[in-house]
Image 1 (cartoon, one colour):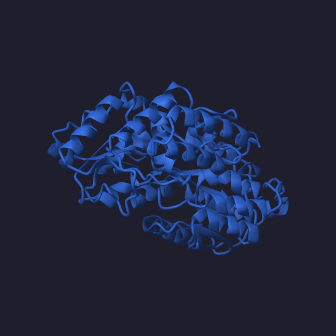
Image 2: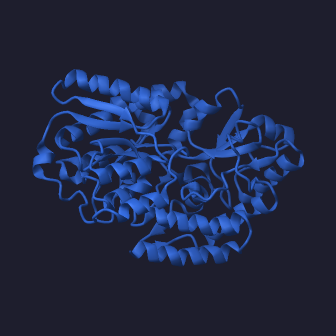
Length: 425
């Protein structure tokens, strides 16, 4: 979800002011076995707040001596900046239900996280619930500092009325060539000012909503960085960059930032978003959804995309960690996952999701497509300097692909060299 994350520099600055090495492995056995009241933070998303409220009420009714006190993440420039400051101050809550995977390496570096492997059966619990995807969230030291919670696999939303006005066929969005042809019809017919309008701004997380989903699709699920090396300079990465470069060169995508939602306002005929957007678009737009395009129109069932996941982390300031671990398990039970799905429309990171909640998906067909896509997602790489790596990529992408000041291939090569260095630190 796009509303958070904007403080790479601030987080890096915070991290540099605290001692490194207290990575959660120093959690005392006393804290790990202690029980009692705990505090948790939720995001400020109203649907998530509603889910959190019912969960806390249910937990507290059954655990009068281990009560949970919940609040929304305090306001700040970004959630990550607020959490980083709380780690530094030593007053982070026990659990935060909206931890961005990209920020986990930084929080770990600050000594702010508890390794969930410290709790008996934790690894088995996570892997049985989430399946193979859980391995993407393992830190370089082999431990888990986040419990996989929910994802919002991003896909292409399209406005049926605008495509019809342009004389375009929604079926012609599967390949780069077809997508570009459709985009040209939309703009030349003046059905909409732009075919698609991803944010052209330079925040580190913006690639998750333009380059990265298509890179995941084109490569069959490759991460931006694997084994300490940038992966995006191959033919697949450069094909994705060239595709987006064509959209900007031909003015089919805007180089200007839109203040609002260009898709909801009819200023763009397509957008990239996850199932959270269904409630937002509702009856405002007669929309359809398809997987992101690939160079050769891969079958939908083979297409990967970005997960846009948010997880749950336990923080080292927590004194009653045994209670916190039990709360984690209760909050991610099949029952609570079902309530999260019903309340928010976001996808619990539970393997076999459609089969787990057949009644819900039978009644809510628009979400069924996203549930199927949720089985084919990639996460941001869990590596040191994660945010700096994404910023380095975005800087090169903005300069070359969006604003045309450098050839994309050369810019990606330069970014890869810088990112390889960051990944080694």
